[in-house]
Image (tube, rainbow, N blue to C red; front, side, top):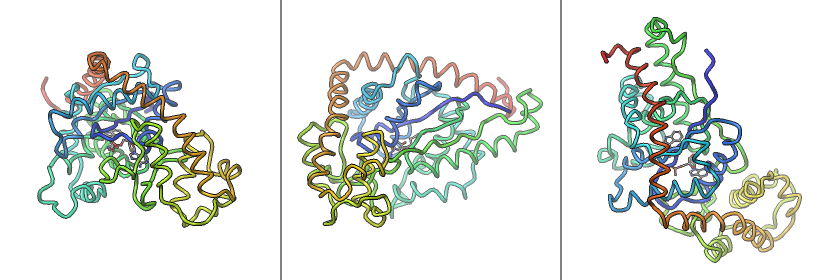
Length: 343
Ligand code: AMP
Ligand code: TRP
């Protein structure tokens, strides 16, 4: 069965939105909106898999929404909302908890990393995180999911869940007139030069919201001075830039900065090295600073402007949630019929 092309993606409201979130995800959400129907979600239910301060969570939710809008996502053309306003996500996640196997979840590296050594003390939500993610996508029967590289394994699990649901319920799916597959197998869209932006302090660690050092990341709300300072202090090696891409192998910090430049300038690593091959890092860092300030400055300023009017942001979320609920409700009714619930 052919499914209508539909994009879904989500970002957690856990503070410190950074350059990795922008280049790996949000910038690409914007590029997709002209060609596809898109649903972009602030995944607050995922956020509380680790403790979130109730007095800070509303701001974090509005901040991700403001970032979506400031980056150019049009909330009239796309559906923009926060996950907790559409109960069907959690409802379908429960059904997927009964489809997914313990062994599948035990393989998830993000859980292992986030739970760390104290696994006994991790929330059950953190463990079940990927089944909710599968529900986010499949409650709209979305077909394509733009994400950064770190989400690849979760996307594979979403496909496994969709496939197993289709298999387990194949007879019922056919009996209810849904053809031979109820859910599409969602495809990850992991493309471009910055699918895994690394820490500015350590080229072997990914740039992350939770890194203790603010110098490891460029936040979307950083001003020009902060951006300049962070790039100036970014770790490098003593050699000048190589003249071709092969020369970036085993130079993770150089590779990262060149990748960031390429993604910000909408070119590729080869193009950047054509311009900066054999240059010293001091020269390249100055150019990267100018580019980053030119691209990120207006986004940060627009986010601040939008955040002055929280009610307007909440109205965007309420409108998006209402539209999302209609679609999700239809899927959920069909799922209930397929599973055999009385409604
Ligand atoms: P999160 O902040 O974990 O909700 O991530 C939101 C989106 O940003 C997801 O699509 C991630 O894959 C992406 N992302 C997060 N960190 C990075 C990074 N360092 N490089 C590229 N993409 C990232
Ligand atoms: N797990 C994603 C992250 O941390 C966020 C997310 C939740 C998501 N649900 C999603 C991404 C559905 C894509 C599709 O980055």
